[in-house]
Amino acid sequence: MTMFGFALACILAVSGAFAADTCYQDVSMDCGQASNSLALPRCNAVYGNYGRHGNVATELQAYANLHLERSYEYLLSASYYNNYQTNRLGFSKLFRKLSDDAWEKTIDLIKHVTKRGDMMDFSRRSTQEEKSEKNYTVELHELESLAKALDTQKELAERAFYIHREATRNSPQMHDPEIAQYLEEEFVEKQADTIRNLAGHTADLKKFIVANNGQDLSLALYLFDEYLQKIV
Amino acid sequence: MFSITKKMKAVIFVVATLLAVCAPTFGKQCNVSPVNIPKQWITMQQSCRSSMRRQIQMEVAASLQYLAMGAHFSRDGINRPGFAKLFFDAGSEEREHAMKLIDYLLMRGELDTDVTSLIQIRPPERKSWESGVDALEHALKLESEVTKSIRSVIIACESDPKFNDYHLVDYLTGEFLEEQYKGQRDLAGKASTLKKMMDRHSSLGEFLFDKKLLGMDI
Ligand SMILES: [Fe+2]
Ligand SMILES: [Fe+2]
Image (cartoon, rainbow over all chains, first blue to last red; front, side):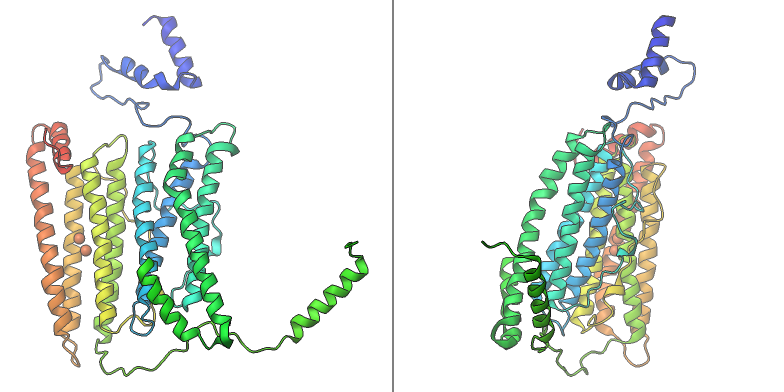
């Protein structure tokens, strides 16, 4: 390589103008050098300013952590509804399904974080998260627990919208269609279904509670639980 | 024609407020009152119960530690998908162990209260590993600690002066210890094969072993 070529390469590397070419430059500069180590710092999976601009990379880690936490919280709700006092197997099944889905998504998100050349940080929290949010309780009655499920599912869905927006619109230096399409394909669509179903359940319970001066409630909850066992 | 003047708006507001205040105040009952069920069939003792609860938390912590291993081996610069799969699967298995222990408690009439405090999520202690061997040996250490902990649950549940919990002890011995010993043997075997493969050809050895873990023949 001529001196001029080398200088040009360095300038281009610093400015990041030909980001796609930099692994090759690492290779051509390092191979044949006297040292027997090969660093190749730019031979990685990072592209499109992922992790360099905006907060998409850190928000994706936080999104994995949120799924992880919700997964175990839903598992506790599923457990609570399976004790001999509550004994609502349908409600238990509903929460177990939410837990399984959140667990699966946790692993998928971790894989996606690393797919984009990043590391997973299990203590990362979202900037969207309120400090006083750690108050999930599972010892709730049926309608309360559905309300919690609905609220937390909406939170997950709205967080996906937020990350999508950060990946596509909010940052002038960050446009990441890959993240946008990942969220659309793996999260957004299914979340709408889950939220609609939970809202529908609360609508049904609401009617049972007010109907017939509340006389229907205990039998209604029993039947509704049987119904949940069939549809979840 | 339907435009509402400010005055009318004010009147409507006052009427609405009055209606809200004076509405008949029968309390809406949104839940069924709890019932009383005889309790003599609930026989688990406090020390056994609390050691089971600690064990559940330990399985959860193990699940998170395995996820961190899966994350590490998924990294672009590490690139060991076979190890990543092994550890992600191990993480899901630990979660299943927690669920099995919870199900057991539920069968015995437990977990009608204090359910929220059963599990805490804390970031896993370790985040990176030198090599595949390092991670396998760490996993083996982790499993040995879990085994030791299950043994302490067994001791707590069989040595209560009021109640020897034969059935739980049998369950833990037959199902959990069995799986622990098999799992430990498997990890130890993998670690020793890998270590031998890496003796003279460390990077090639780990590469080949990783593909073996993926179920690939090359
Ligand atoms: Fe386990
Ligand atoms: Fe294990």
